[in-house]
Length: 194
Picture (cartoon, rainbow, N blue to C red):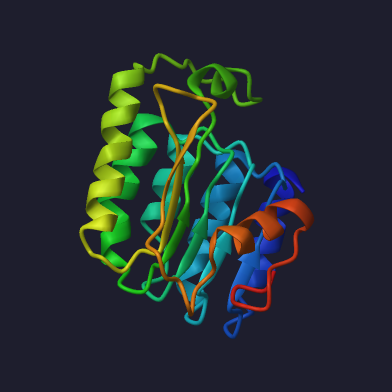
């Protein structure tokens, strides 16, 4: 799809006020495309699930999204993007304002992988800075006790994911549901069905 395609899709999305789930996973949106999608999110009052996994997003794209995420959002997937410290700090500030958020997939690329992505931005990230920003996200969301699933890659151990999941997630997606979405683009019968 790319950034230009995302801009075109965003124009059409503005007409979809009944849209409940949006998946533009692996669409190469980059920051420009994320800004276009962010601009249309306020026009989607029923949107509860947003999947922008693997789109080469960096902090500018994440910041744009943080300012536009619908309050009724319950599922957010930004995995596989170069969120970096600035993006995690923005998420730590924005996500607690979403009272229905129960699942957040935020396992980001390592700074080395982020540096190899297409968008030319200098990556001068300190692992401790990213880890502190990730802890801010976890603290902000888990303190609300409504989050059922939080997945992030540990900044100091890029191959390891740190998952937080309470014992029960009866009415939300559990780890297997998200793995199903990642594996074949299909959600389990529970929401979101993208």
